[in-house]
Amino acid sequence: MARNPEIEEILLRVDLVGLIGTTIKLTRSGRSYKGLCPFHAEKTPSFHVYPPEGTKSGFFHCFGCKKGGDALTFLVDRDGLSFQEALEQLANRAGMEVPRNIRGVSLSKKRSRFDFLSQCQAHFRSNLRHAARGQEAREYLDKRQVDKHWIDHFGLGYAMNAWDGLVQALGKNSDNVDLGLSLGVIKKRENGEGHWDFFRNRLTFPIQTASGEIIAFAGRDLSGDSQAKYLNTPESDLFKKSRILYGLHQSRESIRETRTAIVVEGYFDVIRMHSCGFANTIAPMGTALTPDHLMILERQCDDIILLFDGDRAGRMAALRTVQLAWDLEARTRVAHLPSGVDPDDFLLSNPSEAMAQLLEGAVPAFNYLLDQILEETGLDSPEQIRKAVDRVFDALKGMKSNTLLDLRLKELADRIHIPLTNIRYDWNQKRTRDGHSRVPASSPNGSPQHIQNNPIVTPEEEARKGLQILLLKDESKIEELIGDKLNTHPTSRACLEKALNVLKEQTEKDDLVLFLSAYLDGGVSSARNMLEQGDEDSILWEVEAILREERIPEDPLRTLEDYTDVIVRSYMDRMVDQYRKALLAAQAEHRWDQLQQIAMKVDELVKERDIILSKGKEVR
Ligand SMILES: [Zn+2]
Image (cartoon, rainbow, N blue to C red; front, side):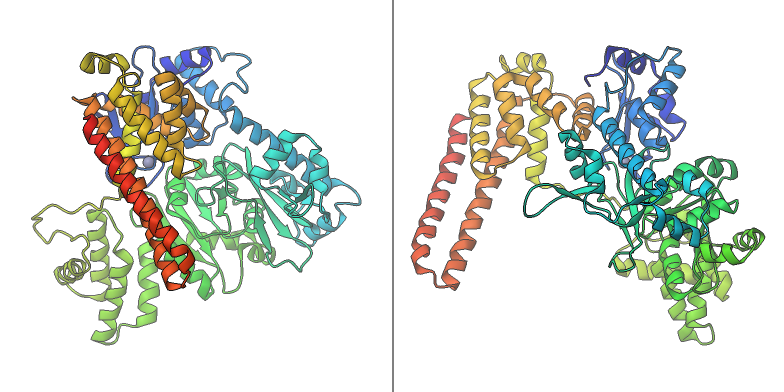
């Protein structure tokens, strides 16, 4: 990847396998190393690490979640370090100096967005401090007993009760306007010129990465008449609600020290907990906890405590969440507050010791589930027991580890005084009916099934990806095989031009169109350049990974023809299909005048498709 040569030098010297190996277990597999992906939940390894080769620095790529990058990206994504921090760490590891003036060389797009959001943050902060403008917001915080130290610690701010407070502050700078629009802090006026603020009369909470970079904002309504009490700026590739935990930056140290994380529901709960000495508290972003959230926590601690309201909604939320935690290595426990009370309320009327006690009494996830289910169903009749067992089975059905599953079934058996063999038998009966995995009976016969969660790839997608990869492969090796390069050989050129024309005709914006145009114009280097300019560089890492994994097909021309054939045919089929539907619609709606026209178009297309396809065969 095109980078500053000094950075490239550091990346070449870094022992990437060793670096990543501190997080996950890697085993050798051909030219790469593989292990369980640290960025998504999986039980079959699809995460590959490629050590440096010659003048090419090492990189990683996950074939499951498509995450990929080099040592820098890895540290930024895994530890939430800033680019600068990551670079310093790597330089240290490699025993080198940190190059000067590297700011903005790489990740520059991300950087400018971080800087832009800091600029917005400065605006919100100054509003809150401003004697007149911030008065209402300060009174509100005062009423909620949040004092200045904690306001500053969490960077709370205020968006004025105006349509263009932020818009004015950002000025007419077109970069600012573009960034503001793409990150959702300002909106375009629907009629007329200009823009307006996304947040008005709201208390603002900066949403930060673990290392403290602002990636989004949440706003709490202060007018009392907005439909949404809390609002977030929209998701972006920086900000994914399912992966971000509020307060992680402020909690990072404490979570590492205590090896425990406390999960609450609201922003004010987090702030209150911190101010009362529970600095290892975080909250999801107004959504339920996701498997990704749990994974992020699992990597940093051994104990996760879910602290929920004791009302029905709180108990339902806890039940849903513990079911995501069965396979975690960290222990997950549930603590409940009195019904209708959140942590903020609780700590305003109770001493911190009372909270500490509550947390200490947190119940392990599976016991919690059993308690809740048995309390609802009762244990007095065989029917009740049967119902309870069914519900426990349902809750466990997503479990991937057979060992852990068996332990839980044993706990269930003990709790309801039924022999474990019977419970296992029932589990297997039910799971076989539902088509899920079985636990080995007392003697394991037959291997446990692994649930593969590979996304389904259509032949067309495969062909599109395959074609791009083929065209990026080592030209000289292909030349050895077919006596020419793929972009100059008449057969492959004809094929690619045909595909390009069909694609162009039918879709206005298509990545493959850009790619093929670049390739036909300037060969491999311009196709690569085109990819490198794209916003999403995951495709590049994937290409890199596949290039190092796979050999060149024995008959590259034939492979190329097959791919283009699939692509062209899929497009033609889709078009014919569209017109046929239009034809039926016209018939149903008695649009006789259009009927003739559409029918002719269908005929034309079918003919065209057949010609294109037979041409492909002639060439071969
Ligand atoms: Zn992954």
